[in-house]
Image (tube, rainbow, N blue to C red):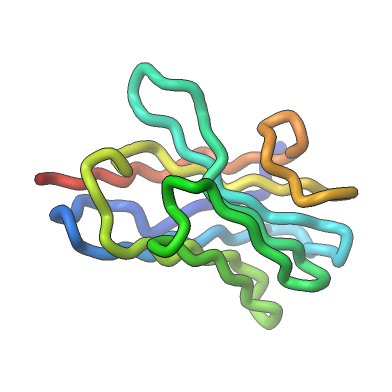
Length: 125
């Protein structure tokens, strides 16, 4: 049963910003890496960003580098995705995911073992 819940999606004009959050009903351990993926209509789910819980190491898809920022809140354990300068091609359902025992920064769907239900982000031109 999933324990991740995303929030913060919505509709924004091109050039605007949104912040997504991912809350976990379970404790997040230092062995976790938390990631964001997205899936646009008719396209496969793709990696967006990842952060490791222990060191805060991050990685981003080339398409979002410089515009998106992933962060973690150790006190309240949500993971945030700050999205700036949003473009219509960023329109997708955004998913939070957890790799509960990462070895390397996980960027593939298969690396993750827990997923949220997703939150819709729509960017209008």
